[in-house]
Image (cartoon, rainbow, N blue to C red; front, side, top):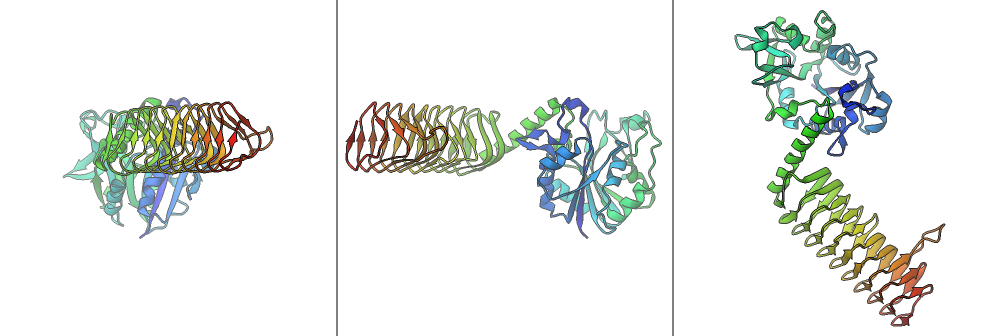
Length: 434
């Protein structure tokens, strides 16, 4: 049996009050739909069909995953939506049906649903609530699930049931096709309910296994920006707990944002209001002070990043000091023991071992050797209005404060540039340039 997915993602999301399709709103920097597809990829499905409608072209252009697309041009209910995604379903498939706006269901929960599914049994996700208002109720007879009744169609007695349908289910492909062909829209909303297949399966004598998630938020869908914000904090809290379990100290687990992947060593410390975007990696014994942002950055062990610094698409070696208020732009590479001080900006710069750019300087399109000192207020004049040019500072160079190095230029090994100089030509080894 092969596992195949149908992901329902056709809704407009009216309550979001947005031109952006609901399933593309970001959670931790990634579209809601992408969370679902990334998690379910762990099931190694034979195929994934995403049913789209509102903003279909935008959804297709935004989601890079290898999926099949199905269109739901009319919003006639969840049963109708699933019908649009049947084109790749075989009779012996295990079909997992979930939603593009339910982003945090665990892989283990999906796996339990798949394990519960075979030719004569369905797996459905259910929850228990003290106040089940708004949810479809799970009806049982003799302990066995017999049907799902929606809130608007429920009798006063049925409304007292506190086991509710979470909407996610797994069903045999042949059964799914047969059941969907038998449902109707004779209900309070005039829609084709996917949940009606539960009653049809029970009447055929098929088993229905109810599976509960570890946490109720796994089944939470997002229909408003308020709900999105709540889910963001849940997700960030989970990531923070994982970091601490892996040996990282967080000054406040409620004040960190990870919008991508953060891989860490042990005994590192992250202070408040730090944001990690994209693919970030930090080693062991790293200290990151408050209000820092790392974007696709690698920071090796023993490095300290002082407050209010931004590192983007860069690699920082061991035992470096950065900041405060430093900006490392794309292409920056620091060897071990390098120092980038306050209000220093680097871009496409390779900084050698033990070298220092301490204060109020700009080093761009440059190769800096080892044990170089760049004085305060120094800039590499790398752009002539049309092209970028390289500056090379060889080992043991000393650049005095408030100097301008007009590229292309090379300052030779051991040379000294006096404070306030504008250097427009190469400087020989061990020379003094003024």
